[in-house]
Length: 224
Image 1 (tube, rainbow, N blue to C red):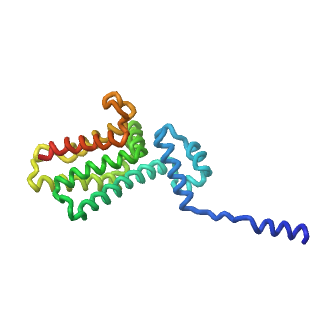
Image 2 (tube, one colour; image 1 turned 90 degrees about the vertical axis):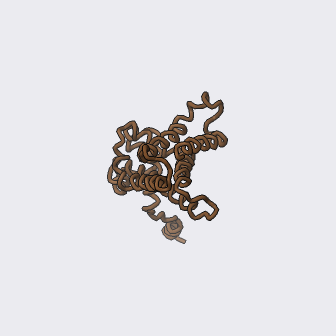
Image 3 (cartoon, helix red, strand yellow; image 1 turned 180 degrees about the horizontal axis):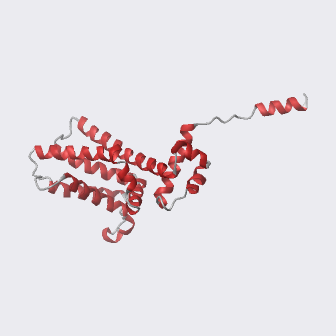
């Protein structure tokens, strides 16, 4: 066997790596999510994302157009996760023949779902906190696409509870949802500084469950 033939055989055994656009796009988004959740938009450079994803700048521009568009894609994905979590959990309750399907119960269930989502998605919390600190522009930009439709689901439940005789005449759905989002978000966002109040790690399973019970009891007092 000649040297040339040996070289050709060796070359032919090398694995040819095929490009996987979907995998590359997802990798960029995942790495960007981690970077933005850690340092916000202003504190994250495109180089930070490129180094973490191990891709070149051309790939980011090819798939997302700009750092700003990538940031918007990150937030859109996180809010869609919440929307899917909310819709699937609520649907599961409605399909359960043993469950109470009253509007009041479903309204309380929505608060429970949001609590469970926040308990399991710390990245979502960090991203919306950063966006709030940096002006909230990206959250406003995705209102029509994902935040608004999710809010309307809550409004529908709220109006349903009112139509079933729940005394809500002096309450507006926008303030109710902000009140309970705040109560839930604050607990998880500032969990590192709440151990002095509760005397234990606020993120321990029993503590998280206790918090959920308390939030639901408070909501129940409103929906009388």
